[in-house]
Image (tube, rainbow, N blue to C red; front, side, top):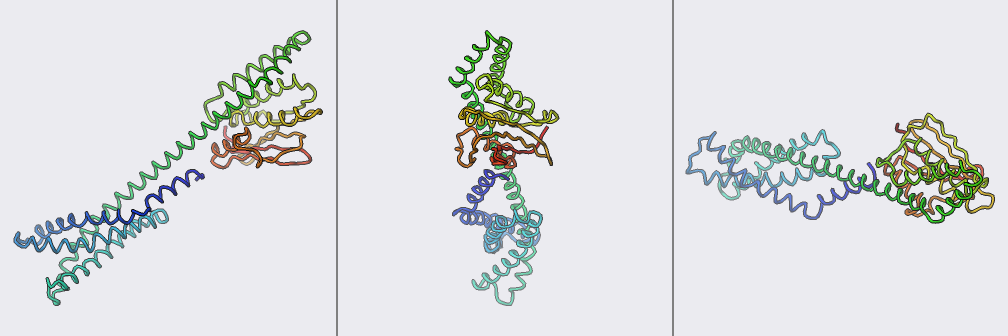
Length: 371
């Protein structure tokens, strides 16, 4: 369960356990009382052939029993449901059954005591009243109690399923938003005036001396802009497609930097079908070009590597720059956006790390390998 889902569930639980939870339980118990009383009177009329002249007394007695059994039972079942449904889902029905037996027994005893204190029955008839009322109390309590708990359990499961679905939808919407932001950021960097100006100048310079390369650069620029504008609407694209975008970008930048930009791609072709977030690898490469190659007179040597191990894909962009800390990158930065997208797309199993190894900066992202 990811962080957003956990927070949503916590909020839901807090709402259900809020300051009015006991009031709601009390109201649930109150409406049981007259309904149970009427049901008990009907049972007396049918099974014990009670005369209509005795209905008033039976109704009053049933009202007492229903109150001393129904209201405490509603509180107890409510408490058991909140406390143990999630912890012991297979035992909660048995726990409710035992609780209803206990409440029916205790309520019948309490009802007899109320009758005795009120002078409605003499002391010697206490147990006689108990044993005559106990079977009906057990039957009515179990019938109503188990029916209501079953209904509440189903309602709780429906609410949980609805909450999970809504949480998933929110996560998907957030992932789509981050992807859209990444595409927009990439597009903005592609059509940045300096980038276009430098690229077009390079193309113009190549036309007299190397028209074939000038044409090829135009083609790569068009391909790069097309991918930025029409990136796959899915959250993942084949690695081979992402590598093509990276090569086009590096070739275009090579017309500007010349020998100052040196790069090597060592990703096995067998990994071409593995799905990766679009513009993810390109964002790491672009970061090295902007902050290393463009900032130093000696340029930069960039290596792009990839491997798959234990069901996880690992992509690395290595440069000989001074390095940086990923913690200093703001969420609005391209790498901050990429880090958030990896966590969302792969349910916290996607990671982005920046380390220093053998005097070189290694930007490494890893996530589950899917073909």
